[in-house]
Image (cartoon, rainbow, N blue to C red; front, side, top):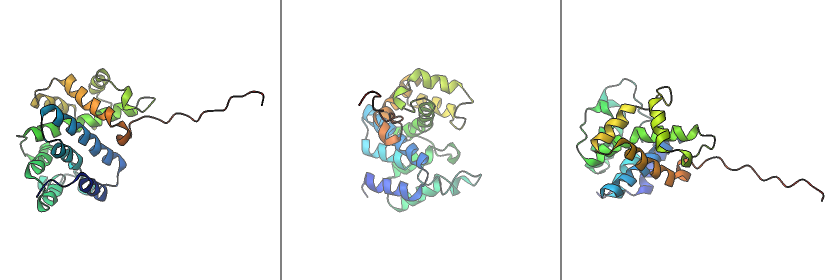
Length: 206
């Protein structure tokens, strides 16, 4: 079966995920994966689709101490395999969760793992800016937030560091690749910033 279309994948994401923030996370990972595919000369559609779909089952099957084969992402991957999605995509989705024990042997799997947590840190970094705009985030700022363990506690810093190392990309360069991808797609990700206040007509004689 050929790779499903992006509209079909997006429809699946919307069917399974009500949370707007989780949908935006998947879109962020998609744009980061597309950027890496371009950089590494890989299949942009396959890589983008892997990022877009990687968490689609999380809301229905959250990690709750269940057996690794009975929760996210295993449940979603079972459905994807039954529907004929490419095995390389399914393996990458399984591999992005450490507890599955599925090794990340392909560049696709390594990239998905590397960008997943980083997109969350960049998003959090943007949302604490007065502008709430990712355009106001820079690499140095992201590195500073990485060192602040109290900031975005849910983001696994070790995954970001290990992910960049597995791709053999310096950490600052890795952050820059993902940050620029998200900045280029800021509108779709809800990170374009606050709307300017409405203009006030000048006060004076009529």
